[in-house]
Amino acid sequence: MQKKTIIFQISFVMILLLCTNALAGYEEGLKAYKSKDFQAAYREFISAAQKGNANAQYYIGRMYRLGKGVKQDEAEAEKWYKLAADSGHAMATGAIYYNGYGVKKNYMEAAKWFAKAAEQGESEAQARLGFMYDIGRGVRQDYIQAAKWYKLAADSGDVQAQCSLARMYIFGFGVEKDHSEALKWYTKAAEQGDSQAQFLLGLSYEKGRGADYDYSTAIKWYKLSASQGHKKAQFRLGDMYKQGKGVKQDDSEAEKWYKLSEENLNVDQFEEYKKK
Image 1 (tube, rainbow, N blue to C red):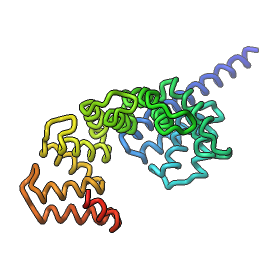
Image 2 (image 1 turned 180 degrees about the vertical axis):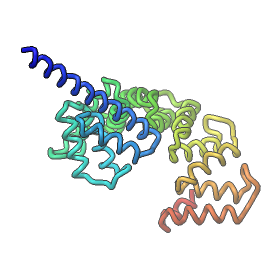
Image 3 (image 1 turned 90 degrees about the vertical axis):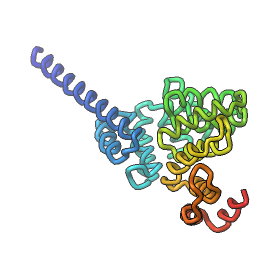
Image 4 (image 1 turned 45 degrees about the vertical axis):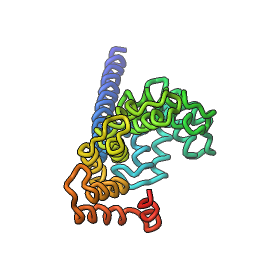
């Protein structure tokens, strides 16, 4: 009897250590993921996922679906999402129904699972649920609900939710129209390195939307966005140099940015954008 008790205690300690290590690996992986060090994130996540951590399994699936840190692979994404879902991971279950992994696509069912994860405080689920209310996918379109869930996710630092919430304030969807509030959320997303937010923040300062006209600040954000290959930021930067707005007028610098923009746009898109 005593021998069985000792064996049980040893087994319990080993399981506890395994779970602790898996949790630590997941948390380190999440830090790396949020800082966009996807290769480091994958190393930490895969170790935790193989030890049964459902959150890590979900993120491995997500990385394979998006091709972040690994080659995009839908079959691997499906495999890891299913493993996480088998452990009751609500976000993974929602993703299975949303993407149709092994089941028929069912946006209503996906929304149900995303709502469950959102109510548990998952910022990614809150952002996804906001998007579904925003466009009426799987749920009846409801801008007030969309803004509510975007706000919760944005407060937790979700970049896409911050950008989406800014758009809601610009157009007055589900909230009072407020360009200053939009500027605040674009700034938060831009400071996290999002190129689209950086471009839109530059545009806000150039056009005086939500802030006074400030060409120098517009240039700063356009450059950050353009350096990441954002085609519209590159074109706007070319215009700023062409017109000498916030910088010394410089035709050669303008031409450089125009050329980069043209390389990132097809010819038809470039000609159409020049008209705007």
